[in-house]
Length: 376
Picture 1: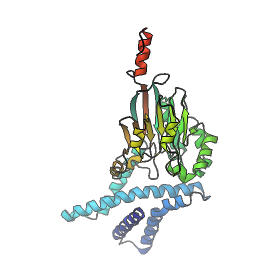
Picture 2 (picture 1 turned 120 degrees about the vertical axis):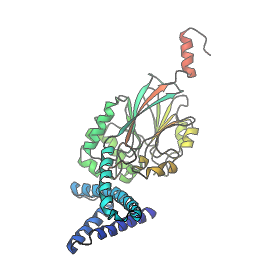
Picture 3 (picture 1 turned 90 degrees about the vertical axis):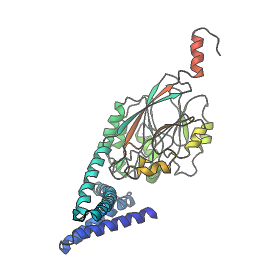
Picture 4 (picture 1 turned 45 degrees about the horizontal axis):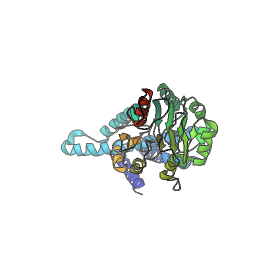
């Protein structure tokens, strides 16, 4: 209940300050501003609540985008109003805070939108102790694309071109490929664009919490029937080079299979990559001997100051970290949910080069065997 109450309180404060600023306008103008204000404040919730209702796409998208933008506009307007109110205590001649807060907020949103449209490409090199065939390979890891009214076909086309430009051997999607509903995907050629992804070793994804919001079974059926993506849900598969991939169901399913049980199905002598949307229980992942885990979900808070909370909420909120046994990467999201802004964070895509460690025992044995020496 805290988040809705804070949201309503923030809107109430901003509405009060807006009425103060337009106090000299005629009544009809005040009524118009009031109606537009509260329509914007609640349009996102209306769009989400009516996501399965058959309405013109233009109306649904307008509601979703307007409400999304409003959330971040509200956040920074309130923060800046409070800041300028404090400054006015020391500089009374400054004038009404609203005249400074609104233009600065608009500038921040323009910057955040441009930043969101240009994902950061992270390059990560991982040396594994275990042996696999074919030598090093390149994986692209993404998460949180949120296809729908927010991330449309044009944005998806840009993402596909960016991914293909990395020339990956394999692509991993760590959940939330789909946003709040499958309906917009049925009306636009999202599947055709997804099918232009290029990865000779395949494309693999797991569900996230938004696949559950959209209907996990329906999302799985859509992916399997319309795209070449391998949908993993509490299952294990093996890549052509012998790397084992475990795809976990999202923790939205309280009955999902424990990681210990999934790991018992894997060959402990070969590398294991785990795809798990939400980065929880990473210490357990590390203790079970998982070689690589790829996750998403956090968006790294998406906008400041929310990103400051992420590392306090999760064992690893975003980015790459080598644990005792496991290499873990948590994506900030290739796209995002809701507000199309990145302020204090970046959208990202990871290009991961995975190498067999040349100093591993198995490789040392092969070198000595090639020289005619006795194996250790």
